Image (cartoon, rainbow, N blue to C red):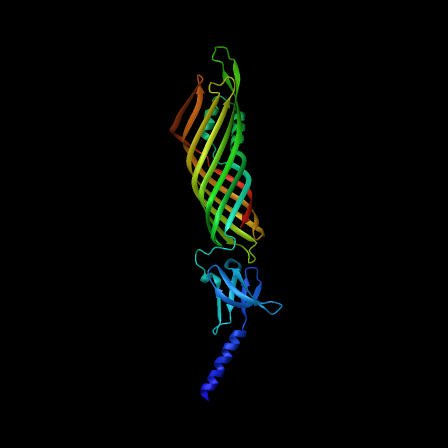
Length: 312
C-alpha cells in the first residue's frame, strides 16, 4: 500500500511540474510565460502554445533578458542570467559602426612658436593665424565588435584639418625704412588611427540610454602645407610627421531603435611632434631634411561632436 501511495505522489509531482509555467523577464520589463528548454551563455530556448494550440519553439538573446524563473523542474530555479554568462557572450547585434562630426580645438598655446612669429608679424595677425590653426571641423569613425553587452574591441579613426593665413611686414634690406607685405597660407591635417577598447554602461532598465567610454592608443599622421607669397624665399614648404598618440572619448548615447542610436561626445587626444621631415624648393631644387632635437610641439586636441551609430 505504501508503494502505491508513493507512486501516486511521484506521478502527481511530475504532472504538476509539467503544468508549471516558466517565466522570462526581458530588459524592457516584459514577462514571457513559456516552458524553458535550454539556457546557454548566448540565448534561452523556450516553447509556447500558439492560438491554434500548437507548440512553437522560440529563443531570445541573452542580452535581452533581465532574469528568468524556471518552475517546470522538480525544484524551483530562479536566477539572474548575469551569473551564468561567460565573459565572451556575443549580443544579438555584435557589430557597432559609428560616424561622428563636430568641432575640434588644439589645446596648446604654442608659446615658443608665437614668440618667433612676433619678430616679423603684428600681435593681431599672429592671433588670427593661431585662431585659424587651432579651430576647425573634426570628423571620426570607428568599428567595434561587442564581446558582451558592456565591452568591445575595434578600430578608431579621427580626422582634423584647419587653415591659417599669416600676414607680415618685412624690411627690404636697404637703409631706407621700406617694408613689403608677405602672406603665407598654411593647411594642417591630422589623421589618427588606432586599435580601440569600448565600454558601455546602461543608465535605465529599458536600455534606451547608455554611457560609453572608448580608449585607444595609436599613431598620429601630421601634415603641414605652406604656400608663401611672391617675396618669400621658400614658396612651398611641406612638413610631415608621424608620432605616438592616445585618445579618450566619453559619450551619452540614446537608442532610437535597437539597431540605431545617436550620441553627444567629448574626446581628448594627446600627441606631441618631436621630429618632422621638411621638404622645400630652394634655387629651383627640391630639398628634404629632418628637423629634430628642438622643443617638442604639443598638438593635443579637444573634440566636441555628435555621433550616429549602427548595430548589426
